[in-house]
Length: 219
Image (cartoon, rainbow, N blue to C red):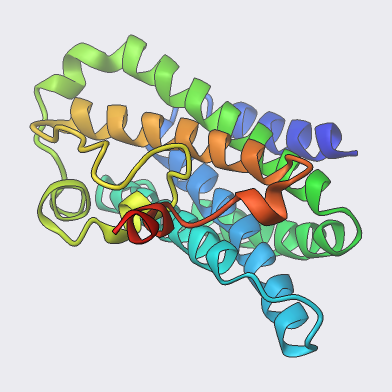
């Protein structure tokens, strides 16, 4: 079922947006942030009912949605959402997938995390292919301001927070042009893959913590 859900999403995006990279990435990022909303919704429900409280997981998943939001803002600044049909398709697919992932997460959290692991792997491959095919042109274009603010000049606490396989401040992308921006986005997707894989480990409820928790524990 999980492979089928990912397969349908990938087929639609790759078929409809085969020759329109920025709208394709806009749709991809609109949908890609939704599962993190689903996880947060269910975790908040469990906490409200007094069933389970895991503050670190709330922080990590929110940081993941925050990262995907900035990917989306970058695509919007590049004009990926300029046509209403793209906005319509992205938002309605996102709404559908939100409820699907909420349902799966309640029944089988690992399956919901595996879904997102596969989506992020596809995103990594898509951006990597784009960098290979359009790298020369991308290096001639300036970085969008939102990318400079997020990756270089802004508060990077949340940027560090979603990368559970790294220590805070370990990764600082270079942002000199549009090529660098897409390299950073591509590499973000692989960090999401690592975090989703970590969430599926048998001892994840005990072992998965906020990256900043390690820093606090060491002090």
